[in-house]
Amino acid sequence: MPSGALLFQSIILGLLLGGLYALLAAGLTLYFGIMRVVMIAHSAFLILAAYLAWWSHTRLGVDPLLSMIVTVPLFFACGVLLQRVLLARLRPVTLTMMSVLLTFAIAVLIEGLLGYVFTGTQRRIQLGYGSASFGIFGARVAVVKLIAFGLAAVALLTLYLLMKKTTFGWALRATIQHRDAARLVGIETERVAGYGFGLGLATAAIGGTALALDTTIYPSLHWHWIGPLMAIIVVGGLGSVPGAAMAAMVLGMLQSLLQIPLGTTWAQTIFYLALFATLAFRPQGFFGGRLAQRF
Image (cartoon, rainbow, N blue to C red; front, side, top):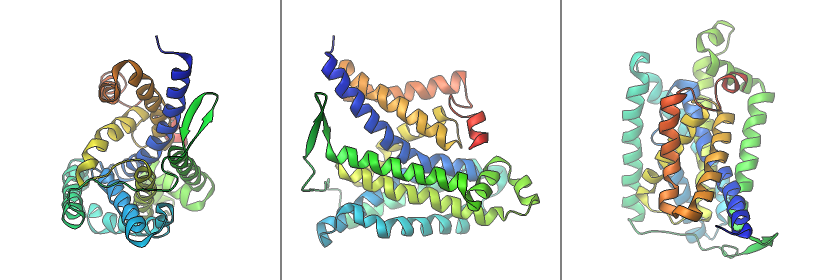
């Protein structure tokens, strides 16, 4: 029987982990909501952002958090370009299936480029505050995990306010809910979809930087992430950013608690069990549905 201190430590870690998962999955569910695109390359862009953060710190001496000044607008522009040049040209009838193949190819291309430029050697950012931690009611909290959680919270709050309080957000939500109806009321859905796709990729820049703070990176790491992230957006309800955030928090907490009796490797199977259960009993997701329409 685990002690109370150990359970509290796991709950704190689960909360921080869930916040990071929510940020990493936000862009992935946004792509599907906007265009019904399954973006396999999202996790590859996360690792690309992590490498750029590592490179800016190692070669230029810049704090990885400051690298986002460049990577966030750069990834936003890449997302708009990717949607306009490649994805918008796919036929609507086969869009979802072809988007899987196309973005799979992009993921392999990014992995190959990272391997060519940075080699397959594992990299880790060495920060002055990398090993710092503090205590809270007997639990130890690593500063880098708290920074990653803070980044996730700020990014998701900004995304929420952008979607709820701005004209662009209203147009994007209308495009997500019914593209044809949005077009009938004068919304330029293609332009909005392009900017929405860029927004999704911009979250990958923030998520990749947060990931790099506390993770050893290598070019093929994105295959490790794509499964759990896909499980999160399916459990949360495809296309629902709030649903993905809630699913991320629940699954992150369960993973952290299951690590006590099962260990790190087996605890991660909770994502796949949750995915199978969702597809079998509630394919629309456990947190989507009405929330997806309200967002």
